[in-house]
Length: 556
Image (cartoon, rainbow, N blue to C red; front, side):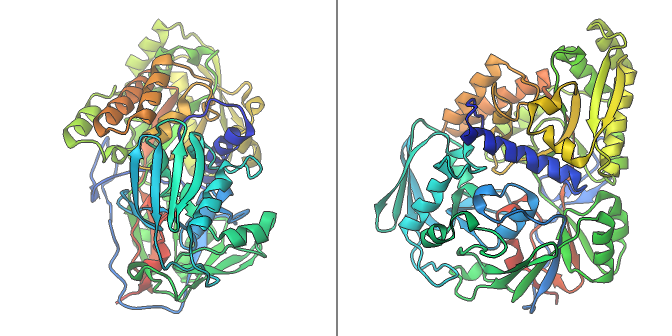
């Protein structure tokens, strides 16, 4: 998400939720990261793996299928949904004005078309003939009510930040909505393909009030599935919506049952036994086991996530960029991929994945990726650089939590690297709940020098990450500040021209990778397991906003 310098609750809550999603994903062991293209070859010693754009198309319909999910959502209200559990459900029930596709492109959805007549005006033509699940017809008033919730401080939407430059959302025709911005914002329209663009019935919002999205009330949207039932602590069921407007995405299953299975071993056993038909975010330590099973097939797909070590304290020895550079060079990131990520992944050269540059001209994109500072594994060179910066046995505290083997392996590798460059690491292991507060409470970060996050983007734009590191941004956990970086991000936000936008993003990336406010570790593809009964899904991080379950049907 882009930056917010305001400390108001309106902005702070949107930053908090982004942090929480990253922390909760880590806590679940189910974090995956990025690759683009159709295959993933060996890079920095990683195991070869294949990226699948689409599994075989369904040969027919199924009455129902079951899907494992690592945690129960606290709500399915789109204004508070910024994590894997609620979003992978809502993606099939509620729809946005635009659609983020599995190939990470954006296309019209509930808005049949849109224009940008001035740098501060976006005009959306609302698709006619669309029905909500209660049978009422979509209107411009529903769109206005839905978008305005993100502007209302009383709502305290986790998606407030994408609306930070919005002055007004108005009905300007029978089926037309106009958004007026206070200043040009090149990211605003892109966010309308994710949860910020969600459209709910205005009548439902008014009737449900604060009960909207809870287990008793559910939601009333326009997607290929409607809300069925929610048994707290056990499962949530969706039902096919037969009056769905888009024939291409009409659900092939009569029902989807999401079962909440918090334990990773339990999920894997459920795949093997056929108790559940599939699930996203397969535990990496089960990759080899599920590759060989006869119970189904393990697939990998596009992602936009990077595993990072956050530098939370710039007043200690890590305040010197040379020490941060030395630490990154001393971390055996290739070893982490092999031991912690099941050998499936790539050492990260940046804080964003390569596929976020897909909209840039090809020649420019290649140049941007080649010009990045590289930090190959070189403990001897790293120790010399650290000594030059004055490292001589200073203590650094690395926060972690006994969440999973992947987190443990990463923490140990970072500690070993700190020792290798002359620092004295101290591992501070805390509960999962306390670990989450590192992302939400500055006081919890007192005395902490480093902690792990898995950071994904919700749009195909590097600004979704780099805006998070601007001066004053809530997710700028170490309070890093660089005027040139801030200027580059501001220029990128204000630039609609692809060349200028890309150039500004590239400048922000160069500075971030030189200064290393966060240390990029590695990326992995999205993982998904499909049991032998079903097929049809398109493996991609877009499953958080795209109606992936509608494409799942019977195997031939």
